[in-house]
Image 1 (cartoon, one colour):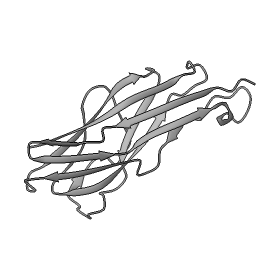
Image 2 (tube, helix red, strand yellow):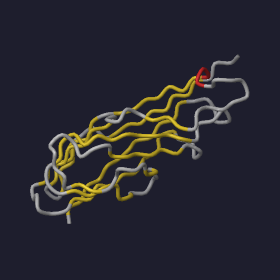
Image 3 (cartoon, helix red, strand yellow):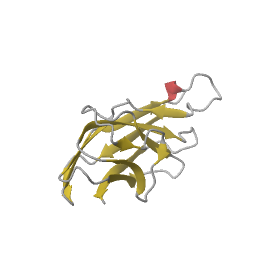
Image 4 (cartoon, one colour):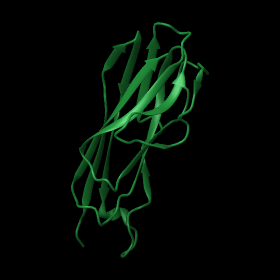
Length: 157
């Protein structure tokens, strides 16, 4: 049996963005090695989806003006990607500071190459955990490494 290995790598921007008086810190990345042994029985395909840890990426948002609403957008910048792969992200909690002024992002949403509204919040939020899911992995995909960069953008209205 041929050992097929596909490496899926997700790179999050790991820097601080200062714009409109908001500091955004993003840390974490995800690399998933998909092997032929993931197929349980001859003639089957890979599992329907793979998920990362629930805190694979951590966002910290520190606005200068805590009274204004902040919108977080997400998109991907493909490096070596296959159109059959579907990457999703969701927020798994409010973060560690206990601030409840946060809404949206609790269900998986597909990440595309166009900025999409992910969630909104107000105030300081530390270590907001994000989880990723990928679908579309199949034995018919060419065996190679696929990678994309996930970009988070914040604006304050």
